Structure formats: structure tokens, C-alpha cells
Image (spheres, rainbow, N blue to C red):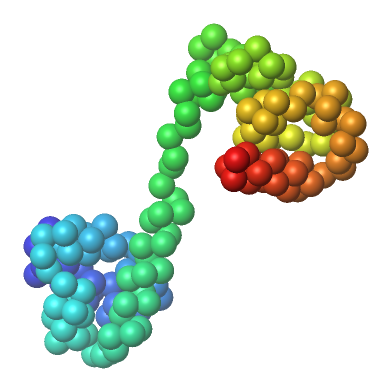
Length: 168
């Protein structure tokens, strides 16, 4: 789409009063961004649009409309799931969530599933915390002895240990 075609399309939508301004920009943001990547500035688009429509766009208002439309694109783009999760979703060699997370562990101590960590300690341990615990040499029994009740307490303790080791 050329700049002239975009301006005509934007003008028609704005002047028709069928759409609120934000919807007009939401509908045309992809074309605007393509032209932007070709070197046409938002300011130039705004100037050309102001020549055609009865309503005058101020720079701040125009930039806000663009920003909001771009934000909507970012939030609506689908995110490609990781390979292991994609296999589960597609029922290719399905594994449970705990098996997927446990398969990411390297050492034997980490082969204990997250479910075991959570059941034994009664704390909702994350994959990252389980990895950090193993690297620090803390097993389930040792963690139970520490009498932590929240994941935040576990993270704080791990941070202190890692900080001490980095000083040594």
C-alpha cells in the first residue's frame, strides 16, 4: 500500500464517522508500520492526513493513537509454545507437566519432580528454585528442616547462600 492509498483509506474511515478514531488506527496500524519501515515518518503521515480530513490531529494525540494501536498488536500476537509444551498440546508423545519440567533437569537430584518438592515441603517451588536449590546442595529433607512456608522465603535464603559463595 502506498502512502496515498493509506491516506485515502484513513480519510474515508475518519470522515465516515462509522468508527471511533482509535479503531481507525487499529485497523490501519500494519500499513502505517510498513510505511514507517520504508522511511515514511509518523509526522509525514499526520501532515498528509491533516490536509485531507476536517479534523486536525495534534502531534501528541496522533502519537497516542499510534502507540495504543501498536500495543494492541503486541498483545494479540500469538506466542509460539516451547517444543515440549507443543508436543503435549499436539498429543505427540504426551508427557505430564511434571515430566516435562523434570526432563529439563540435568543431575540425578533434580530428577525428583517438582511435584515431589511441592508435596514434601508444602511450598509451591518453581522450576528455577528447584534448580537453584540443587546447585546450592540443598535437598528436600534439608529444605524441610529450614521450616520455610513460602516460595519468597526460599528465594531469599537461596540469594543469601549464592551471595556468600560469590564472596568466597
